Image (cartoon, rainbow, N blue to C red; front, side, top):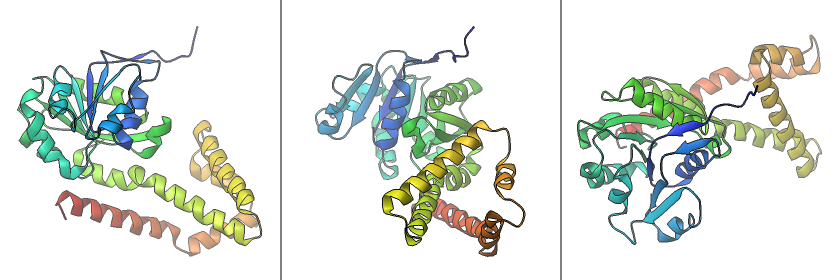
Length: 284
């Protein structure tokens, strides 16, 4: 008997625009327990960036500055096409590859702020579209990715895309109208965590610890707390209460955080992020 998860089997895949997120997703696809039909075809504008994949087993990379038809070549025969270019570049890329796509292809967007409607309007009716919002922990296989299916996507299409993103972490499927709100939590969330680490580290230095000591204290505490949360069946509230003895030091500190309005602060911060996401969707 074994507790090992079964291999993930995926059809042929092309990634157009292997920036930081595209590369993170590619890293998941290259795991030994992930089996992709054929090489993953990857394109970049820069020949130097494409050359970074030279010798990488399971990857065929090309650059549009060397081969103007690189994107069209990459999508031919692909069952899943991941669009990883900058949002402003999406319309031109869709125009470029639309007639080279296979009839049953699934196009997956990782371009923030570009609605599914933009993709569906530019692509043939036979093409299914899903929009995704992975976050940066995809680099270490601990992403939380939100996905939303377009009007032409089937449950089978969504299942394939869930399997793809499961190679870099957890996946949650939501209606597209919730995707921008999701981005303010899991998409921007790593920055909130890093900011809290940054500020608590500065506080530790102000209390007389060296920067190295402060980093050890704070980073270790965040990592340990996160691991405890991941392994425990308790809620965050229950775990917090276990640390917070009545009338003790932690209770006094938490009272100050509540007095400072930390919950309302997170509400305002995520509301501001959501407003900006909507501005970006309107091209502002």
